[in-house]
Length: 467
Ligand SMILES: Cc1cc2nc3c(=O)[nH]c(=O)nc-3n(C[C@H](O)[C@H](O)[C@H](O)COP(=O)(O)OP(=O)(O)OC[C@H]3O[C@@H](n4cnc5c(N)ncnc54)[C@H](O)[C@@H]3O)c2cc1C
Image 1 (tube, rainbow, N blue to C red):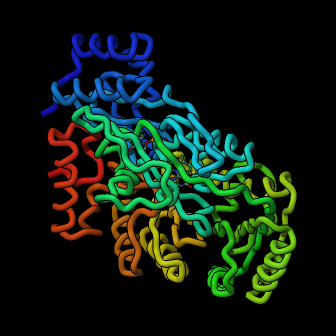
Image 2 (image 1 turned 120 degrees about the horizontal axis):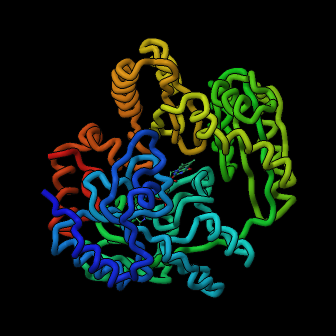
Image 3 (image 1 turned 135 degrees about the horizontal axis):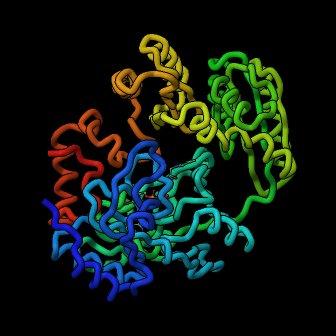
């Protein structure tokens, strides 16, 4: 159904980007055959690394003419198989397009290319007293273009929202090879349909983002972090609800269940404080004024203790903060260490429904005989549920995982939630799209895809179930 990449196509790609930026040897292409989904792999026929929007446009024109699939790739840190070339063809990596083009203090905007590592963007603007809040935990490896394509979130979403709240302008190359420019350094802009927000979270299926204008904020001057253990998850959840009801909006409220904390302890080979507590909350408060922050800290600390916290550990300096966050940052690695074959779900429910969701997860885990460890963003309702294969046979694992996914999604939807809060549908969840949307909505989405990509060359095998 798609054409193969032949020698003529490779020669043409070499002309477009230079021979040094085209890879076709199998060992060179290995890193481009997977993202961070364990056990999902598909080989590209060629990898190409353009250096400009004009080169991206030429590649897409060639692919569209020849009917060759193109899979855009950022840092390859995705957790839904979005950058995996399911149908082979061309992997288009934006890694060379990695310049921060301008930090504009007068407009509080930054203009970047898509291959900038998100953590580098943070550091560059922070060095100038500015702040880009979205902070996916993968920020030292993922790219800002991948964050746009996935609509990435992070712990700071509670107070500051996600990537979509910061994108003011985009340059996009369409699958047919035209370059379009959307928005600008504008705080207000309501002209026409909001194609910027259509691109955010479109998972590389509508166009390739080649330039990005992002809104910035002043860098908060004060920060304090709290680690708060509880002997009961219900108490932790009530604490979160009460903090928000008191109109204190922390920057982040993360939670970790006991088993997840203990998995980190085993990996780190050191003790995490109160690791036998049923749940931990990690709360971050930030602000411009020390005094106001101290008052918030007192209020939050008291609320935690009123709700039965076992203790409130406070970190005001960088090394202590890093120690408090160490376990949270290491969780995915710890899970891989526990069971190299595992599967991460990323459901999102209204904040108030987290206790009901976790109760349901414990119940299905016991009943189906599959280990499930949960952690995530208590402040915004986004829960990561990790199923571990442990020593189940291949067949048991596949059957039980499938059943666990089905039940988890059913429960999530019944609680008013959705099946992915930040990792995307990609290729791993596409067969479940019809659980969230009715046929009319899916048809509408397919028509949008057709309008952007009439020959379906851009990132096929993603988002939509196979027809
Ligand atoms: C340890 C770990 C922690 C994580 N924590 C978080 C978290 O806290 N929050 C969160 O949201 N996610 C998280 N993720 C998931 C992942 O890091 C994010 O989805 C991130 O946005 C992916 O960026 P990337 O550059 O690695 O994209 P890739 O994996 O390379 O690609 C992701 C998708 O974007 C498309 N794409 C990439 N670049 C472009 C472009 N320029 N134009 C168009 N499409 C493009 C690809 O085709 C693909 O569909 C985590 C992953 C890991 C491994």
